[in-house]
Length: 145
Image (tube, rainbow, N blue to C red; front, side, top):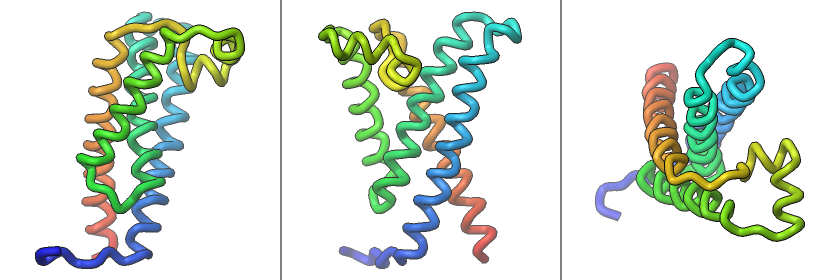
């Protein structure tokens, strides 16, 4: 490795913990949007695609928490592949998969209806995840100094 410094295990652990905490915050936001968005009078577009955006942000952060050694570019690629595979899995119908999709967990994790617009929302959500990950890294660097 040309000039690369070894990454400290404590740094990796801290990075993972920060990303996991951010993912939990994003999950709370996503669930709040799904449960309270319509009662608060938010438009269907904001609730639907806001939820998709936050879902993809969560995927990016969880992948980053599990694989802290990877670069953000690598995390983006993995998160986008996961998002696209999950979206296209909605075109697959088997009795057990359709039954799971009818549960709350299934609807939140896999969704029910295929839409290419979700892929756009996922890309925006992953970009949002990169942005908050960078902000957290900068804040962590300043607090460690």
